[in-house]
Image 1: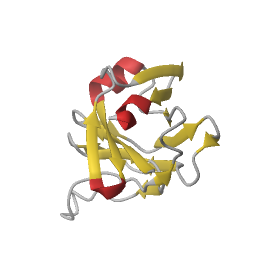
Image 2: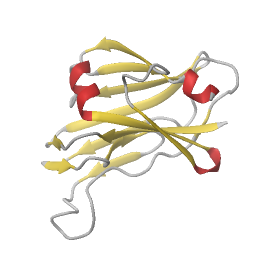
Image 3: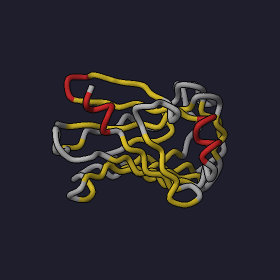
Length: 151
């Protein structure tokens, strides 16, 4: 099975020069091949509710305020799908960021999307009973999404 995960603004999120997100998908066998995502913001701007902040499987460097230039909404590119062994192993989504150092900020400011083959998209928030948010350190999170995949 191939999946991707996206971090999406739940309310307006201000990013600034140096804001970054690293995301990846992990199983018992280690980091899923081609799942590492990195999003860097090289300017100050706002991501509107529903705008993508980060995603797995690709690198995105934001250096232009698209809204100010009249080119569309600000936000990161869509996740690229990565293969994971499913059914089977526990599936974890790793996030490392300097934007949401406290889990309360992450829960209040962001939601998530799980993308699967065939174009299926499932939105969820971090208080959802089907996911388990673990805080590793400030700005470092592991989210167990196994139960979402089981649906």
